[in-house]
Length: 484
Image (tube, rainbow, N blue to C red; front, side):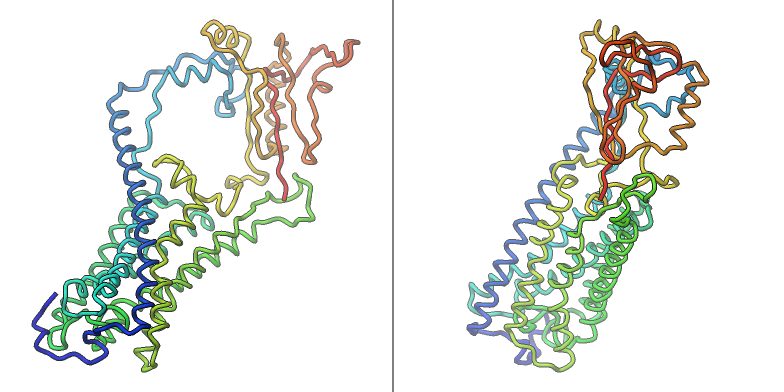
C-alpha cells in the first residue's frame, strides 16, 4: 500500500531486497511450505465445521416447527413400592418406545462451548498462515519489495494472526482450567462475549498501530521489510512491544501456568496404586498426558520469533537463518493445532453433534465423580414388569432379556442399603413369575449373584424358589469396577 511515506528514504535493513540472497530464498521457501500446510489443513477443518454448524441450525429450526410435546402415557411401572422415579434408568422396550413416540425432547439451542473456541482458533490460524504464505510472492519475484499491497497485507496479517492465535489458545486454556480444576462451566453468553472481545481487542491493536503512526508517515511506511519478510517498521520498536509482543508474552506465560495447574490438579486426584480396595480408596481419575503437548507446542512454535524480535530491539544481530527457522515454527501452528486437537478431541470435532454435551475432558480424566459423592456414580436399573413385556410383544417389540449394560462403579454402600431397606418396607415380597435375579461383580472382578440371598434351593441343580422379600429383574446386569 503506497503512502506519503514514499518520499522518505528507508534504512537499508527496511528497504527493498532484490535479488534474494541464498539464505533468504531457501529459508522463505521452507516457511512458505509449512504456512501452506497450515493454511490448507486449518481451512479444511474450518469449512467442515462450518457445514456441520449450518446443518445443525437447519435441523434445530425444523425441530422448533414441530408440535408441542405430548404428555407421556402412564408408566407401566409400579412406583408405589417406595422408590422415587428419579432413581430409575429404564431399559425395557415399552418404556423406550414410549419415550420415542410419546413426546418430543427439544434440542439445545446453542453449540458446544469448546467447539466455538476451536472454531475461532482455526480462523486465527488461517490469518497467521496466510501472512507467512505471502512469502511465496517474494520467492516468486526473487525479491522483497516494500510499499506494495503484498508487503502491507503481510505486515497486517502478521500482526493480527500471531496475536489472535495466542489469544484463542489462552482462551481454551482458561476454559479447560475452569472445567477441570474448578468444575465450572461458564454461561454461553460469556463464551460469546469472550470471542467477540478477543477479536475486537486483536483488531483494535492493529488499527491503533496504523492510526497512531499515520501508517508510518515520515519514516517510509508502517509495514516494511523486517529481516526476512514485511512487518512493523524498526523505527517503531516501542509499538512492536506494546501493541504486539507484550500480549504474546502474557499469553505464553498464562497458558503455561494454567496447564501446569491442570496437571497438578489431576495428579492430586489420582489414587495410590497400592490401594486396590474399591470402597476404601478414592476414585481413580486417570489422565491423558497428551494434553501436556498443548502448551509445549505453543511455546516452541511461538517463543523463538518473539525472542528474536526482542533480541533485535536490544541491539543483538540475529541471523536470517534464525528468523527463517522461527518463521517456519510459528507458521506450523495451524497444522499442529489441527493434528493435536483432532487426535485428542476427535470425537467432539469430527463425530459428536454441534450441541453435544461432550467437552473433551476425557483427554484429562476418564471418570469424574459427581460433587458431594465419594465413590463414583450410582446407577439404578429397573426391569420391565410382566405387563410391560406383554404390551411390548403385542406392539411387535421383543424384550431384550440378555441385555448387559455395564457401569464403572458400585453404588455407595449407605445409599444402596437405604434404597434396599425402603423396598423391603414397602412390600417387595411379591413374586414376579419368570424373572431372573440381579447379577453383579465385586471390586476384585469375581461375579456374584443375588440368587442365594433371594431364594432357597428346591432340590434341582441351580434351581431356586424365590419367596419372601427379594429383588428380581428381567435382565442380567453387569457392574464393572475399573482400577488403575
